[in-house]
Image (cartoon, rainbow, N blue to C red; front, side, top):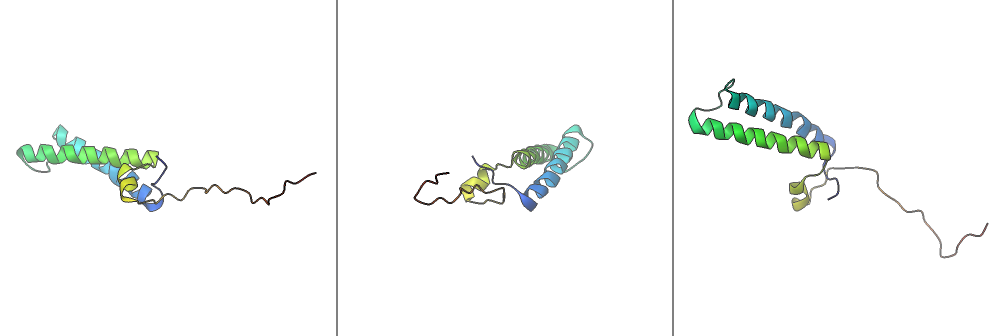
Length: 91
C-alpha cells in the first residue's frame, strides 16, 4: 500500500491519537470517569483503540480506510522520468 496520509491530516492524527490513548487509558485505570458501568468501559476501550489506530496511521502514513475511500492527502516527491527522444544520444 502506498502512503496516503500527509499534511494537516497527519498532524491531526498525531494530536488526536495520543490524546485518545491517554483518555482511554486513564478511564480504564479509574483516574477518569467517562460514563458509569459497562458503558464507561466500552467507551474507554473504543477511545484507546481509535487513538492507537490514528497514531499508527500517522506514523506509517498509510490508512486502509483512506485507500478504500480513495482519499490521498500525502504529497510526497513525485517520480518523474526524464524525457527521451526516439534516438539514443551518442557521445
